[in-house]
Length: 72
Picture 1 (cartoon, helix red, strand yellow):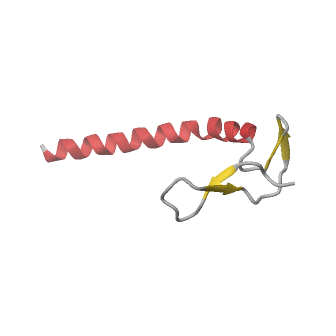
Picture 2 (spheres, rainbow, N blue to C red):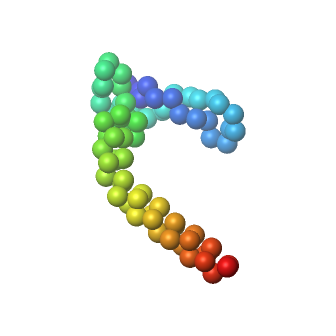
């Protein structure tokens, strides 16, 4: 079976998609998904990466503010 997710075409700057070519690993609500597009796995990855994203945003904000202070 093949993953049912729609992915954007590479190199295209307008909205065109194709079906994911990966082999399905799980079935959720009657649809087959690969490991990348599985909704449950995506949610778990998002929860796991949230602290890293917040730390990166805080670091970038502090660098931005420091840059503004040095200009004045």
